[in-house]
Image (cartoon, rainbow, N blue to C red; front, top):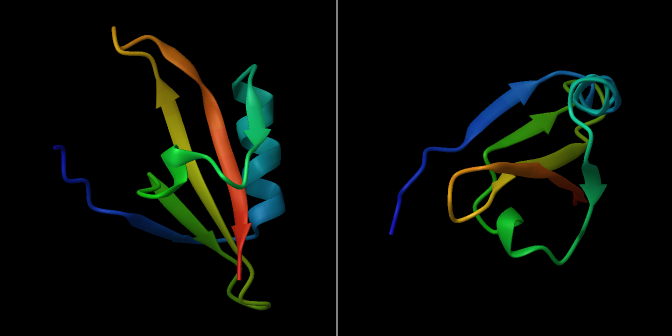
Length: 73
């Protein structure tokens, strides 16, 4: 099992999602996704405290498939 260190980015989550959508074809909000159990990074709005978990999804052969995200409480 691969252990990854989660990265926390302090920035406006909406702006981060806009940038991801600009650069990646497939960006989906999937709250129950297994990929979000251990996200690649969490974006935290320093003013409101709103958090968004984000994971990059790759296929078994290593090919990029998309980005999955969800809001956290």
